[in-house]
Image 1 (cartoon, each protein chain N blue to C red):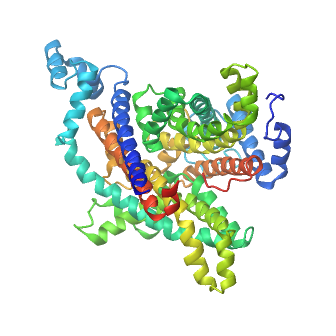
Image 2 (image 1 turned 180 degrees about the vertical axis):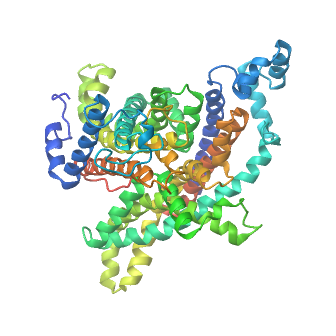
Image 3 (image 1 turned 45 degrees about the horizontal axis):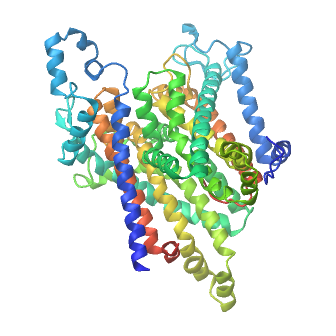
Amino acid sequence: MRRLIHSAALRKTAGAFATLGGVAVFVFFMLRAIPGDQISASLGTEAAGLTEIQRTSLEEYYGLDQSLPTQFFSWVANLFQGNLGFSIRAQQPVLDLTLAALPVTFQLAVFAIILALGVGVPIGMLSASRVGGARDIFGQSLSLLGLSVPAFLLATTLLTFLAVNFGFNPNGLGYKTLFEDPSVNLQQMLLPSIVLGFAISAPIIRTTRAAVLEVREQDFIRTARAKGVSSRSLQFRHILRNALIPIVTMTGLQFGYLLGGAVVVEQIFSLPGVGRQVLMGIQQKEYALVQSTVLVIAASFVIINLLTDLLYRAIDPRVRAE
Amino acid sequence: MTMSTPSTSPKQSSVFRRLIRTWSGGLSLFVLLLLILLAVLVNLGAIGFDPTAQTPDDRLLAPNGTYLMGTDQFGRDIFSRVMSGVGSSALISVVAVTIAGVMGTLLGLVGGFFRGVVDVVGTGVTNILFAFPPLLLALTLASVLDRNWFTVAVAIGIVYIPIFARVTRGPVLSLREIEFVRAARSTGMSSVGIMFKHVLPNIYSIVIIQIALSLSWAVLTEAALSFLGLGSPPPAPSLGSMIYEARTLVLIAPWTLYAPGAIIVTFVVALNLLGDSLRDILDPRSKEAH
């Protein structure tokens, strides 16, 4: 039995790495689909002024004179050595930029998840307490809004409303990390986390409601009730605990939404995270930057999904038995 | 829809009738039809103004009898721009979901039905596309393709292929072992014939639910792309870029933000309600959020 568990976990891990390999190939060829050549794309109008020799030496410098498979494998080999490329505009290695940007996005994602769980799970439980009742209608409407209000609309509205009426605009100043200035950092993270947290609280409300409703129908709940277990203990120790698996799964899945939504939210609130790094790379046509950053983001998503999967295998013996 | 198949799904006409009988289904269909009707009328020039026509004398006017939602910084009628934006957003989303639906369903159908190498490759492609946060993939694809409304639709369509592949593959796997499929096989019917005639009609309710839900995601993704400046190029009106431009105007002209904002929320709420009602009717067992 134990060997089986290990092989299932191993199989999942191997699968995740195979997917990552595929992701690298996909990202590489996707960015080769850019119309025209990369030198013209990144230099814009200046490219017209290049002499034949300058162009050839640039192509040689970026390895563009090599065949595509050679370019791909040298990119991958460089990645393994920690060389993600060099950003011309920032005059910095992409690795340094990414290492500075990742914690920003990660902190944002964690805050958003905490907010979403803190709001979504209780509302989902209240919603399930009486199907069709006032609390249920409230919970369902809130989750419908969470699914329907675009993050950029909520962000823009919150930002302008608070800045105009209360002069609250912590994101107008330069970004401070949690270690440089905790108070400013937390203020800067507040609105972006609310925006993303609101969006992902919707699926969490819905999942919690559905899971609680399903668990409540099970025989062991009737047994517990018959035994005289108090209502509070029934709610938390029996129902919520068993409803946790789908909630954990849904939370893990929302990580992808967060990494994508981060592009919009980081842009609006001027947070220097990986989302904004991709967007700036796209706007400034720095495709080496885009290529490596997109790969890093996709890799984090794959790893988070793998960890969620392994985590609930560890929590729930039933999954292991399957 | 073939009638020779022992299908467990209800007939289409009765689905529609049951849909308009629920309050959420009826209301959402009404709102969607109204929005589309207004978009078509504006685009035909029957109501409102030319969405790109600038009237310098009428800049930043508050909503009034002539301009229902006011005007923007170039004196363009916001009502006409919003409705025209709804039209292009609907067009892009429908094309995107068609691409995703056809490609994804084929991927799930063929992979689940034939298993073997086809399935391994199909699942691999699905997993690779799933590894990207949806908006990030749409954004990167939109940035490498030439920019026009169709490439935006293709970018969004590719992002949602894996969802269709994943929701159809599972049911197909169990359907291929079911008696009537085996019976069809024993009569010497070709595999492709069985797949399209007996398996596909039995997953149509799953596909329809997914289409409705994906439409709301596609509208949101298109709006986010145009907010970030990667949607259809200007001066074509789009809800996302209108909201982007309104950021700097909201102090002096709040209607520039609230008009497109309210309409996009209404549009997406209606699509989500439609998806939820369809799911309640077609798949009563499912209580899942997504």
